[in-house]
Each structure stands twice: as structure tokens, then as C-alpha cells.
Length: 171
Image 1 (cartoon, rainbow, N blue to C red):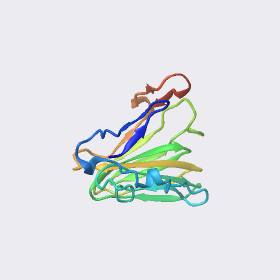
Image 2: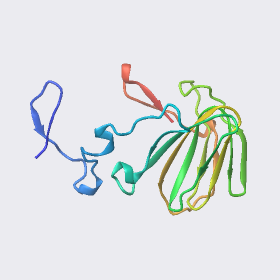
Image 3: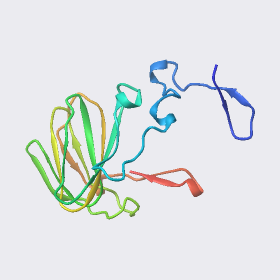
């Protein structure tokens, strides 16, 4: 039996949120061992796949740093992706769709929502930096019911999480 100690309290048995053990993130996963470290120099800042995280079929995430003119290819046959323009400006091609010069933020801390592009499974996306940029790419299992589309900042809903010093805004 594993135990967890809450702040200023006695240790209590650890209660899992899910009874199915395959849905649990184990303490020996990459998150708890600190094996996910950002790269300061490479184009790939960080990349976490379901296999590398040990959760097999759930979400994945990657972040890329692009200099002006750099290109990143995004493709997954069984997973949908969402390309989020964190900073800078990029152009994105997905199938027959082309979006030019999307993104306007110079920092992720600006009080503005980002641009994003939805990429269904089995379609490749080509992201080209128009100026220095950083993008995030989230992926999840999908059947591919929806077409590719641009998600503009005005379409995003902002919600507040946490209170006081822990307040943060999620798009």
C-alpha cells in the first residue's frame, strides 16, 4: 500500500482516482523522475509522447522553437493535433488549406489568446515561421470526423483557475 502525506497531516493511504490501473500515472513515470527537460538549443524544446510518458493512448505534447524560415512537419495517422502559435508569426498548410502570417504575440504572458490550427488524423501540416516563433503541438487519439480549421483568438474562451497567488488563465 502506498501512502501520501498531506501538508501538516498524518500519512494516509493513497487513493487512486481511477480503479483501472492502466489509467494511473505511476510514480516511476517520466514526470515523477524528472526526465522531461527542456532543450535550450534545439528546435524541439520538449516532446512527450504517450509511449514516453507511459500512458499509452492518451495525449501527447511537443513544443518547438523556430527561427524565421524554419519548417516543422506535423503528422500522425491515428491522432488529431492542435498547433498553437505561442509566440511569433507562422504560416500553416494542411491539405488544401493555407493560413498565412497567423500569430501576433511576442510573449506567452501577453494578455491575448493565441492562434491555433486543428489538424485531423491522416493529414500532414507544414508550419513555416515567418519570423522567430514558438509553437506547441498537442495530440490525442481521434477518428478524423472534422476538417482542418483555423481557430482565431476571438473564438477562444478564457477561464480562470486557482485563487490569489495561484491564479492563472486557461484558453
